[in-house]
Image (tube, rainbow, N blue to C red; front, top):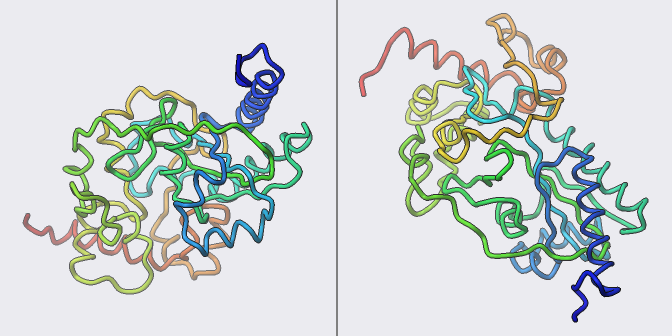
Length: 299
C-alpha cells in the first residue's frame, strides 16, 4: 500500500486536502478547480512573472486554479460582449478567491496566499487545462465540462502543500468552427493572432486604422466579441448557472450615455468591465457601426 491509498495515514491526509479544496472553491462559486505544484508551472512562466509571485507569496508551493461561470452558454450579445454585462469580473473574482483562500487558511491548510484575477503572471489557459479544469480550445479559451468557455479564470498562490491534479492537456474537438466564424481572422490553424481579435480592437484607445475600423464594423459590437463562443459546438447545453453578480441583462447604452464626458460616464457605469478605457472607444465604435448601417460596404 502506498501513501495515496485511502486506508493509509498519507491517503487520509490527501483525501482531507482534496475535500478542503472542493469545499472552499465550491462555496466560493467555482464550477471547476484544481492544483499545480509550483515546480509544475514555474518553468512555463517568464522570469518577471516568477518575481511577481515571489514578492506577493514568498513561500509559494501551490498554484490553485478555479473557473467561475458568467453565462449559461449560447447567449448572444447585441452590442456588448456577454462577459461585461454584470459586475466587473476583476472585483468579483478577487472577492470570491479571497473567500476560498481564507477558508483554506482557517482550516489550517495554508498560512499565506495571494489572489490573482485576470492580470496575472501565469499562462492562464495552459495552467487551468493542465490542472484538469477543462479542454484548451482552438480559440485560445478554456472549455469546461460544467459551463463551456463562459468562465472567468482565477488563481491563488499559496504556501499550502496541496496535491497536484496535473495531467495531460486535452484539446477541444478541433472542428474549426471558431476559425471560420472569427470576424477578424484572429484564429488560424497556426494559432491565435491577438492583433486581429475584435475583443482587443474594440477596447483600443485612439484612432484605428482603416482596416481595423472595417473589422470593428464587421464584428457588430461596440465592446468585445463572442463569435468564437456562440459558434462553438462544445458550448450549448453547458448549464452551469451564472453567478449572481454576472446574471444581468445587457446594458443598453444610449446615444446620451455615449455623449457623456469621461468622468460622468465612469461614474454612471462604475463597477462595469467596459468602463476601464473610458467612454471614447465605445463612442468611436458606435459611430463606426452607425456609419456601416447608413453606408453599407460590399463584401
